[in-house]
Image 1 (cartoon, helix red, strand yellow):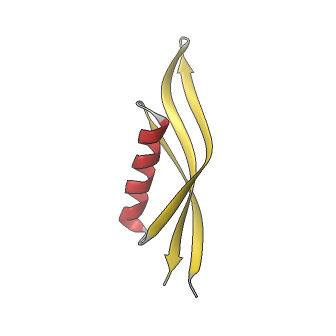
Image 2 (cartoon, helix red, strand yellow; image 1 turned 90 degrees about the vertical axis):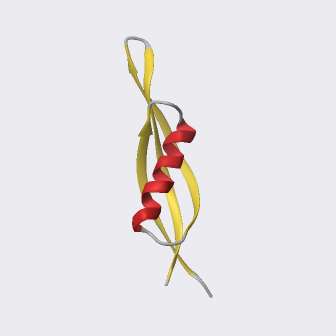
Image 3 (spheres, one colour; image 1 turned 120 degrees about the vertical axis):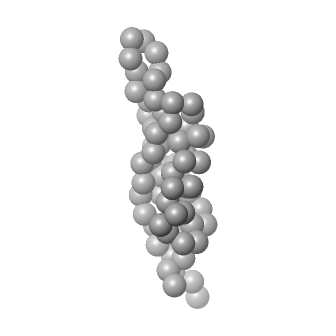
Length: 66
């Protein structure tokens, strides 16, 4: 039987929500072994002078506890 743990992380990108998600997974994988899934819990943007300047995501990452 596997025991899984879920952590919540936030990330941002000036390109897209997809880029912010990829950055979060890549960075978290440096300190957490075995990340096996990510769920996008929330998305938001920063707006300046009527233009989107930053994409933000809140992710729930799942990994197996050893």
